[in-house]
Image (cartoon, rainbow, N blue to C red; front, side, top):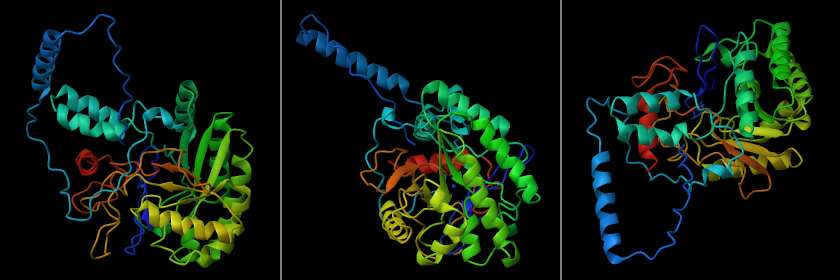
Length: 383
């Protein structure tokens, strides 16, 4: 995508968002487990018992130190401005579902078994946070069913990304999508039907509208794309527990938000719950919020959500060439939450899955492939 992301098919992985144009259209947690306070003992605590407790605790800490061996090098941290990742809200303040079998969660288990406990603890900043699920392009049903069942069982909301529009990503890193309009409608109908009554937040077709605006998508398919997006909103909103946010790119891509207004309206944004920004990109929260407020005003007060998955240190400084593709020294951003303190901003989400490669650049694997060393770099840089 112009901010490339990656969508999986059963046989392939596409950029779960490796997104962007060199203009910074980069395409996309720490969940500090909630700790309960220790129960106060009813009996008085003597000075001797306190000393013994301290000695035991120190011994336990020493015993937990790991001597990791042959840890692959993670992307080096840059000398950019320090991470501005906000103080993380307690895990139970997020209404979104945490996937216990995510790539990050499985990596934590593997590294723990190997004795790489320090690295495993770092990676819990991702594995213990809710990230979006990108259902496969050939058949979305298994992925949607697993996510909605898991979320419903936990009393949480599943975050899903519908990313299968025909002519996707203009043939770039996340190229692909449904073969034609009928195939897409069938795919989207299966996607929506499988949601059922589950509580879901759907990010609809990252880059699809911005690619109309920047001219990357051929002009002859603009009308078709707008109709498909509008019909998709209608279909998804038939599910009573589903919110839909139509993607609108990021501030460094379509710098004038006014250029997005008519294309978003033609695509049915006024029937959706709002629009999404910064998917798979690295723009800082304050920049995105300001841009979102401008676009919202032009759309009559539309609400929006922000992808904060990897923007803890903002975009890569210096040259914009390939700045979107696995940039070094980036950090995790604000953890997912619907407590934003902003009436227009419905949620911060991790739409891009932190640790999924943006593409074969800077030593990374194919777009959409889980890259544990990069994930570890994001976690470490987050402090």
